[in-house]
Image 1 (cartoon, rainbow, N blue to C red):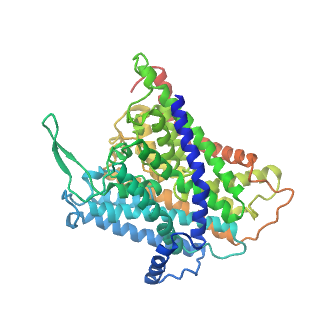
Image 2 (cartoon, helix red, strand yellow):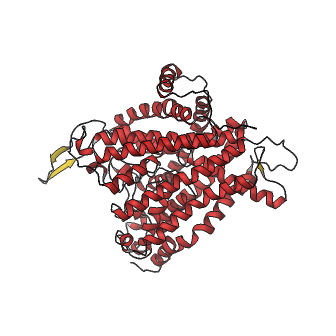
Image 3 (cartoon, rainbow, N blue to C red):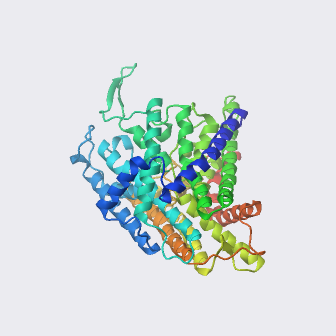
Length: 569
């Protein structure tokens, strides 16, 4: 670890704090339907979309109706994206004449992009033409992100409303998010990316002759337009197989900084939106503090582990100074690689500028833990906040048990229904992650795709289902997942991780909205200070530890101990 590395991490943290309140204030105005500087441009478009689709922007929905609208919209998106992939060989804007995608891969990719996962079992530049990339993948990068933000708003309204039957209008929330937030940022930052050297064109791939006389194909295409929304929307699916380690996706130190700021920007700002909508920004900053503590802890462990390097190589003089540089871009180094890996797995992004499969055992364990906890550390667009609020409900229930009174949060009594739904939403994730892994590591269709033996092979399988269920999309690259078994089971894991968590969460939103506000009393637990932050962090770590420690012991922990004992596999 170096002072320069810590300064870069500190700079990132300062910039994140600086953008949180201004972006949160702007987003609050957007979702309240108030006038913004962009209303002159986008308000007529917004009205036109409502008129064409028959949506009454003043009519709100019950949580069940909200959920049905979200599921119907998502299913329609799945069908369209699946059809685009299966018919690719007949579609225009396919200069490389790429063939139609196989049924199992088309299913996997469609589920992946509608769930904001962007798991990629394929090599993007040799699988999809430009039309599928733009009209299919990029469009869903916008829509799945907007859907997640809309769902977070529904839960926030549950806390802010009293004796209400509605939690908002899904169509309005999604439309405003796309028009006023995602699109403007993507247009501006996309131009910055082009300025920095990220290509954005519809040209055919370029054939060149290298100085050795060999022939090489240089892939290009509409990269910048997809790059921005994959980061801002915490989607993560790259235009190139090397993702953000590729110089066409992430050419400079500035683009690297921009990308990791984009990943956390909306998740961070939503904590401020939460505070503003409930009328007490200190509550939002308390949630921010919980996320920040977990983020900094993960970054520290990952940076330390990678800087320490592999003890089996310490007899080589260069390793004593370089740390573990396997799988890393020299232009980013260990500090920026560790920071990027932590951020992308804290959020449901999955973009990478280093290969997670090449991290040290403990270094690779941190991204895995980040996803196992539900990616609540700033998290995906929307999903980070509502996932964190589920843990807050559990934490307040624990606090209530300790003092012998009915738990409450922000004036809402947390009764049996809310706690049960919160636990259901939290526990469905490990059920999928661990259940699918248990099957995959004992049958031939699962083990035949693993490139490594021993605990690292187990980690490859575990990480895959953790990433899919957590809607992250990053992977340990040793897994050859583009086969029917993995495509199908990972697709199911993505579906479970997204929708079987959302439905209980929306049920909580509806239940809370119907409750009255309870006045603050002398026995009310304060939820804007250090005690609250410590309680929530403790509940998160205890829940995660009790659930996942056995599986981690079989993978990265035993691999770490074996490495120090001089054992390889």
